[in-house]
Image (cartoon, rainbow, N blue to C red; front, top):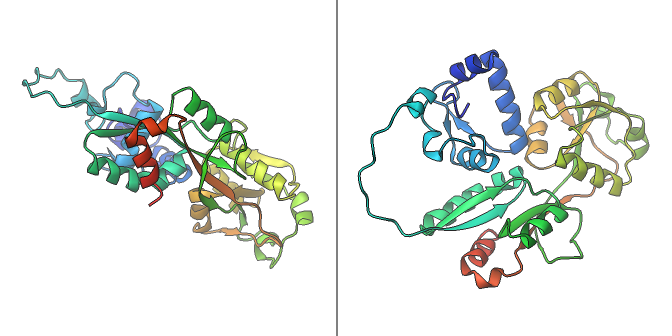
Length: 294
């Protein structure tokens, strides 16, 4: 979509129906927890969050960021030499590592910090998910500030608690569990489950939370990262699906899908913040880390 510039051209380039492109983009945005594009049917301009996501995921590894909002034909056309301009002072880049849904939660605060500090640019690394990921990124200098998922504070490096996201389990509206006033751990043990694919880091977080909550779930009936497929399977009563964060909130608003009432709540997923060991030497890093808690 970024390269094509609009929905019709993207569908033509990929040899897919426009409806499938739109559906899959909606599924991706649901997983991320924020919008990537404005006016999908028109110019399909990247949102500010979409632009940073595109940069972080290197969707256009060969193109410059300045080309992303122009249609491919315009972006590919020869450009006249730019007029000389006065050199701008270099901007200090702060690398923030975080799961994509956490970035979605922080995007307004990050935009406000950049607007108030014109000499600061914030870049993203969306690969960090766990405490181990965050620790490695900070120690190797790949991140200045890292947010990560955890069920408790890690013992081997300092971090601070940001907020918690409850883990909920969802079923189709016609599923017996959806109509029950209380579902037990024993009930769940016999119920088929839906899950994200095995290499999806959110699946590991969810499975750890279920294990800590002493939930022995039933066999996995479907593994899929496409939320459209998960929602269809939920509505068809193929199995149950556990989720947290923006994805869980979106599922709770979907027609034909309901959160089941458990007899005991599941452990919540903590979102924690850590900064690189020498952050005190860079006031801008400490300032941003503190600003994100305001």
